Length: 225
Image (cartoon, rainbow, N blue to C red; front, side):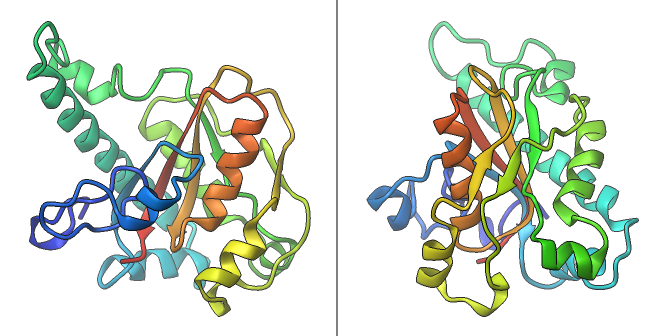
């Protein structure tokens, strides 16, 4: 499920599907986000979207490890592709061994901080859990990374994102998060269930970079086409 249908590539920064021959999407070319890349397991469309909905609306916590496993596979595939590209560069051998590729050596730092997007108070009251945090916990185990850190807090509550258009999401997400822990010099991966416009993860990345993070990667289960 990690690859988009029809062999279409994704924008490396936001994971949006690209038209044939494109290198980056128009939005990222016009206004790059604070995060450097996005890796997604699948498009938010049938059949994958049903897995996300089982977790978010049916509260089936058993779906978190399933989604995390698919995300980890997408990371490994991206790492393998990165290693293959490096191997084509003179003086570079890419991954030394298949095991290195499996561990994503040189692609994701071994001390990478996994930081889930914090849920709104309304969502926590409704669900009793944060889907992003549940996924991040399982993803850490899948990738042999340290346990997720809750390093972001919401400055304010926002309307339910599903009811908002792109511009409203962007306005609502601006300055939404504050970093609450030490990230200076660290590489961070923001984890969320679904990425739609990128406004939420973009606001998270902005807060983390402003606090001194070396880089921010976005890891999501699904990307809205």
